[in-house]
Amino acid sequence: MRFVGLILVALLSFASFSSPVLAAKVKYVVNGQTITDTAINQRALFLRLERRGKSNADRRRIAEDELINEALQIAEARRLGFEANERTVDQAYNRIAVNAKLSAAKLTQILNGAGVQSKTVKDRLRAQFAWQAVVSQVLRQKVKISDLDLDLAAKEQLGDTVSYDYMLTEVLFLNSGGKSVKSRTSQANQYRRNFNGCDSAVELSLSYRDAAVRKLGRRHSTQLAESVAKELASLEVGGISKPRTVANGVQMLAICEKAKAEDLSHVKSKLRNEVGTEKLQKEAEDYLKKLREKATIEKR
Image 1: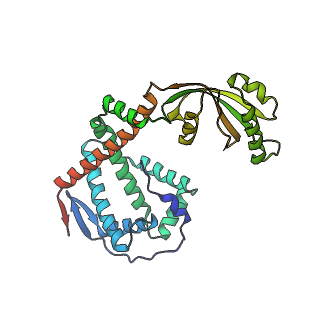
Image 2: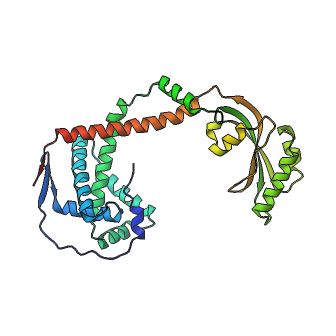
Image 3: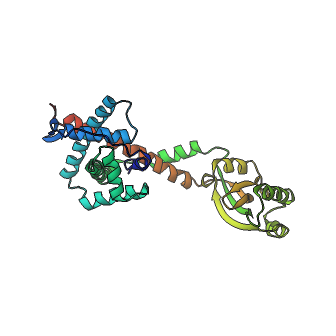
């Protein structure tokens, strides 16, 4: 679930936007649910904090559209028996504050300084939770992904650089003793020139200070970074990759075994998540579109 991007709020100025206090006027009625000009103005101000919309008029148009959608989403969730309780909404609001390194009270203060009530944020969170329940409990059941389609997609995705299973050993020159990355890389390259296969990897490492050898076990190329998979695909058994800098030192990977991959499960698992997310998003968009088509939306 995408929360509302409030982490940016902490970086905004505390300039106050003064707004005249006027009686709220109803601008839309959505299946009997009213949307006031105050709610629209509040959402437009919040969109400004999120840096969305090219102009005030554009932000107002987006605000109207979002509030109509949210009225439909909340109504549909209630019809199906789903509704976010206030405690859940308050907890989500507090998490936004924590992510922005603020207290909830400070977040409310910053919002108020920009003319935005905390209720505006909580109303959006409430709609997001309600719609998430509809998508998760109702629409997810409609998302079907055929294993045959996944097999075909996986085979298309597998190329010469990602179609191998490996048994790998990691050789790591640790950052320690005040030595620079350049110095460690130089030593790693020397190790690489003298490398003569996995069986002698540990023995060779004893000639160097703070060099660690660790068996990584079986890895499919889809479990590796693309650049690493591409390099390993060009090496034979007994080969070792070029040194690359990692968080705790300089790393090389030695190939102890290498075989063409027959198991597509790693690729299929990744594709299943990607395709499933895309299909679910499309189902949600279509569902909301149908709700709008059937709705009675009156503009005043």
